[in-house]
Length: 296
Figure (tube, rainbow, N blue to C red):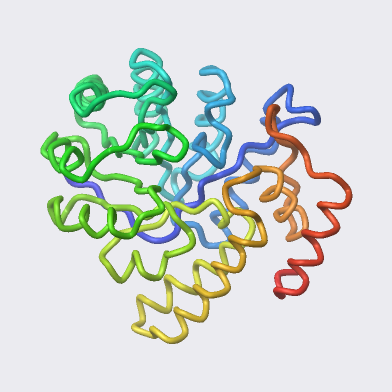
């Protein structure tokens, strides 16, 4: 099945109301449009950065609908539809197909440890439930516990509508093995902002980025310079991108990214508990670090 993705795809945050009780749906569409206007070639809502697993299936469906409505004609929309169980994952993946998303990204089921046979059955079941609709694997063992090995991914790549993988293993060795194990038309997407430069040079087709919510200009500097063959300039942007990962304590708190977005022009609302908000001191320290790095 033909499916192509490229560029910087924002792992879009989800705006919540104060206290995190409700999704702030009024902000979802404008946020999607803001990210695309700043350079995102696609959006990946309801993922890790988007606090997707803290939302109910109905909330996730409505977020997906708002994103597709806002930007699907201008940018690629890949909805993260993975859940703890197969039935909910199939429900959300079918919904993504039905509303006009371009693909679904399916994180491995979490908490329980599954062997390769169980994980393979899980993904084959999802793909079979949505024939003709592109499905991407999402490998993030640091959060999901379960690790999709390169040989397992290679077997799943034989399924017609399993068209790629978002690799967030934080392991360049894994990424290198993966790139050599799958067909050339299989979309290997890097999900680790710290080594975007290296991943693109190795052959990754695109990047799904959490920090791009706040600083997509840095990652665009990496990507556009690599496309032009300007390796020195691309590396200089990657150094700044890696610095941003440290500034936002990459992956630790969604509130850190949201505060960075507020400081750069978009109020993305609040986090959902048990995620917590930043203290006044933490906000001040973040602003100081961003100012020192030339980000505000």
